[in-house]
Length: 295
Length: 257
Image 1: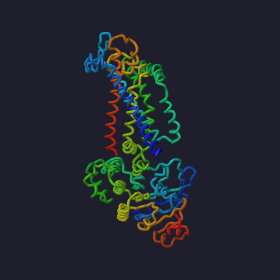
Image 2 (image 1 turned 90 degrees about the vertical axis):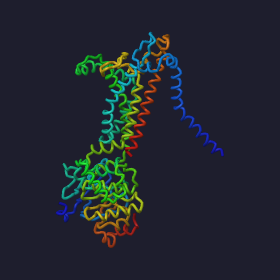
Image 3 (image 1 turned 45 degrees about the horizontal axis):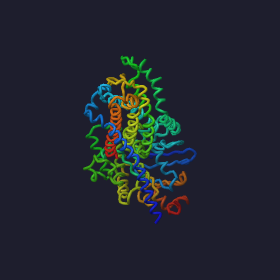
Image 4 (image 1 turned 45 degrees about the vertical axis):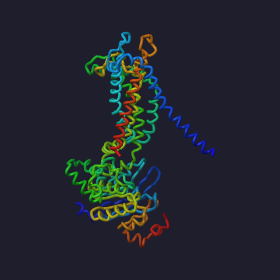
């Protein structure tokens, strides 16, 4: 009798604990919404999201510049990271001798553990001058080096361990017999990887990329240090950007005497959260379709 | 071309030794596999049956720390000689594994996969190949109106016949089978065996099996391995009725397993 009660209690307790993360997200959205209500009441949402005029002292709080900043930086990071990570994971999972794989795995995990401010410093000391002195002149433009490209490169390096780690695990779950089936037909290793292994692993690889993407959207410190933080919509990758997290981190806590400022920043936070949620939902939808078509 | 070689064995194994790290998996094996017959490789589990089979198309290469010495001659060519194009060797042989592993694509594309990677691109030609091979493996009537459904939707028995069709589509001379019915129900197993009997007039078939009754039903020629050594080989009737070695006698009677 007591055993059964304990069983029930344990079940209920664990359910409650498992619910906590979900509740936290919900509470955050609710809290942010509550705090941004003053500005939502004062201005139409379309103006807040799609106007690029940010003049807090004049009471203008258009977030478009910052949303575009976030999208630009993330897009560049993903464009660099995806080919890099895919090829690296394919090499590690399919070609590398087991020794090498066992050696590199902890190194890659270590990369994931490096504090983001260190990546930021590396960006300032290495990536920014490199772009200013070599890459931008090569492209025929002048740039301070603090720009979308610098932020994208730093971010790509930061999401690399996340994406590679998960992708390698995913590739290792593809049964060897499937590879053998393709090889036995006289396919080369590369044909086997391209047409069979990657196909089979695609849902997992997409999940890995999304995981990296979520991190890229939210990354604050390293991006803030190299993106330039100029409130203008970037036109090329050599222009500076001012992503949402950088805005919040830079401005929150100062100038709070300006009316609505605080509310506008929390709306920015809400927008960021929503972008991340939307990307995750979209990715999940893609995942479901891919899973169905692969089987 | 095949006709001219009928008198030479399609596969000739000479002093083959295979090691996995320190484990000596195959010990000095020499044997000829006769053409256009069904050869069964029998023996208890772990005796090296699968290793011997996979040495014929160099799939043993994939194992970690594997070392091979000796020769395997396929159509007179030593496939372990340096500079051999492994993909060309493998194309000569279809493979059926223990469990069917359809490629993650449609039924049609599973069969068309081999011809495509070897350069057949024309739709009409692929259509003909797919139909012909699916008929040959006895699956056509069951799948003709859902060729573009995912192969994973088929039953296990159908999947195994699909794998057979997939292997036949690259026009092999030899079909290698590793316990091809061990995951199948009796009805599906029987259908696979029927296919083998039909196909042996045009292909050399090598079947690894631990099911003695299956070997007796199917085999024309039998190779008996025990702990990595070749104990005895010969025509099926002789191995099953009057084996020379005491060990073979005990195994075919079922007293060792």
